[in-house]
Length: 164
Image 1 (cartoon, rainbow, N blue to C red):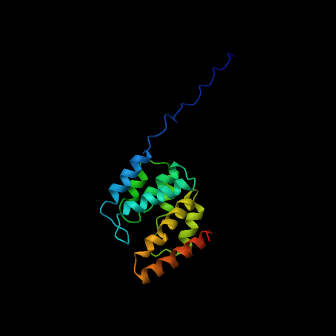
Image 2: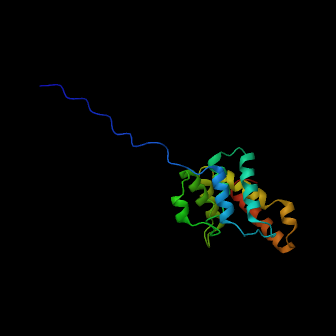
Image 3: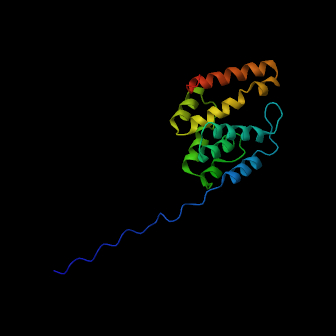
């Protein structure tokens, strides 16, 4: 019986990595998506996104988390669609973090916090988001009732996330 020919290796279908948006492109996309939007104090919303991205960087977050920080409110605010996110040239981890941080209508805070805690990398992004949202200088320009309501909301979420 003649020897069997060698089995060829399976085709390498991994190919080059799929193109991914750079952080500069993610930032530009987020700024464009939120153009004209302001925060509760009337400041351009992109200032919040920049502060959260910088907060993630200062806390040791990686590029995927920083990208998610730029996009963390995009789907929730209808600035970008879930379909856009699904098709975007971003890592699965970045997309998962953005979706974890996207609050759903009527969702209890406990369920929202549980989803964040269950998603690798999301807690750090939410920590940076909460830190900027609860910044006393930002809250000081709001009326007393809003300031009190938001302070209580952020304190509760930090507790649910085991942050204080």
